[in-house]
Length: 380
Image 1 (spheres, helix red, strand yellow):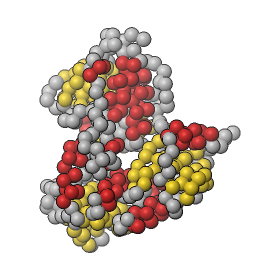
Image 2 (image 1 turned 135 degrees about the horizontal axis):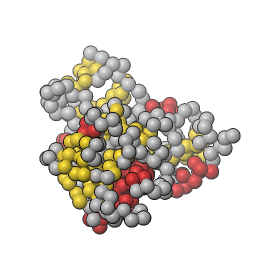
Image 3 (image 1 turned 180 degrees about the horizontal axis):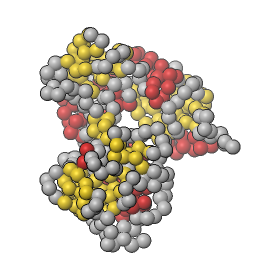
């Protein structure tokens, strides 16, 4: 399908934005294609940042070369969009017209510092990693605020360096998504690596200016390094007043279409109208980038806008998950033993779908996908 005269603008050099750009060309769009991106490091893979790059296993972020796509790139931040004139305005004052717009601005790290409080450390971009690595090299003690995926990956980097680390959260590690069974196993393994967990029954705030610790439940805890891993916030400020975004992000349907014609969205900035909220995983960003591109061209997508796969690291082992979350109850153990740190686990959900988890066990993602598909329980 030729779309020579159709101007398509992708806002965001995230994985969703880069995937959408490549898919647009692959699906036959030979017209003007513009990408607006504010990250000074350009297009790169973010999942390895908190795993390989932070731990020093890779010196640089894995960058993506889009030079073969004949894209006009604008290294600037989108400041606003006029949906009547179909124009995106950048912070530097450049007006970029579009016929179709793909919103892929991702999310920013959620911060908990008070106004005017300096020294908060977060991890979201490659620039954040560059700032954090020397702090890790110099630290003997660390506090990680947040026991989610990112918090546990930062904790793993601390453990690898021999840093005494305390993880603070209202819930046990990863319990909200992985359930009690895996959370207990993860906590036990981390504690065996000298990680301490502190349950916070009240909000955590940062202490000092610049930050030197945290305050929680009337206590002040100090450390050489404090890292906030308290989730993320969708980057939607530039969409204010358009009706495209709300407090949750940008709502999309199965074709990644938003509430306005000719505007699509993909990645961490988006959430499904029919789902429970945003699912900011790498695999979803890729799938949605492909779907948004096809929809912008009026073509049928080649995949669904969701892909239930992710992987993470805890001290000493990796975890791969294929299938829906959250997990509840105890699994069927297909192979190995969780106590031994190597197991293949299966959860069956009420809707008939299945989740397969490789806990410290080396298994190809294709195998995990096949097990999840073959072991699903048909529903009538």
